[in-house]
Image 1 (cartoon, rainbow, N blue to C red):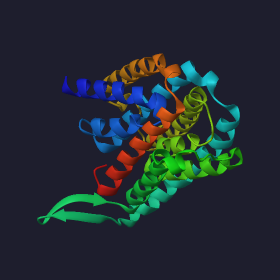
Image 2: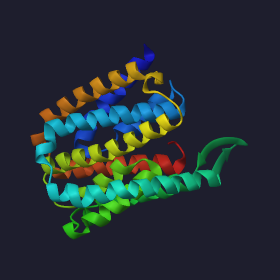
Image 3: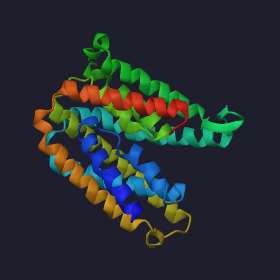
Image 4: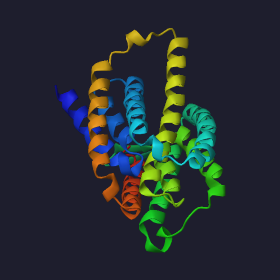
Length: 263
C-alpha cells in the first residue's frame, strides 16, 4: 500500500507542475520507483508513466503546439538523443566518478555526466531567474541547434525535458503554445526511447508479460492524468513570466541535486 500512495502522490504533484515547466515527472518518479523495483525496472516503469502522461497531454493540448517549433526542434532532438545515449554508454564503461566523503564515509558519488548536466542546468536557471537575462529571446533559426543540444544532453543524462524547456521558454511562445509544443516534442522523444527499451528487452529474450510493475505503472499514469487535468484548469490564468520562474527554480534545484550527488 505504501508503494501505491508514494507513486500516486508523486505522479499527481509532478504532473501538475509539468503542465507549466515541461519537465519534472520523470525526475521525481524515478527515485520513487527505484525504492520498490530494481534500477532497470524503475527506468522502464518511469518511461511508461511519462509516455502515457505525454500522450494524455497531447490529446488535450496538442492543438496548441507550434508546428515550426515541433519540427525544427523535435526532430534533431530525437536523432541526437540516440548519440547522447551512446556517449553515456561509453562514459559508463569508463567507470570515472568522483567520491565525496564525510568522516571517512562515502557521502555521494558524482559522475562527470551529472556534474556537466548539473552545471548546465544551473546556468540555464540563471537565464530564467535573473532580470538581466530574463528578457533575452532566441531567434527561431536556432531551434535546430537547441534541439541538437537538448537531445544529446538528454540522451546523456535523461534530463532532456529540463533542457528543452529552458530553451523553448526563450523563443517567444505564448503559455499555451509553450505547453502544447513541449508536450508534442516530449511525446515524440518518449515514443522513440520506449521503442528502444522494448526492442532491447525483446532482443535479450524477454517478454512484455514478464514485466511485474503494471499495477504501479497504471496507478502512476492515472494520478498523472489527474494532475494534468488540475493543471489545465488554471492554464489560461498562468503567465509566461510565471512559467519562466517555475522553470528556473526547478532547473536550479535539479542542477544543484546533480552537482552534489543527491540525484
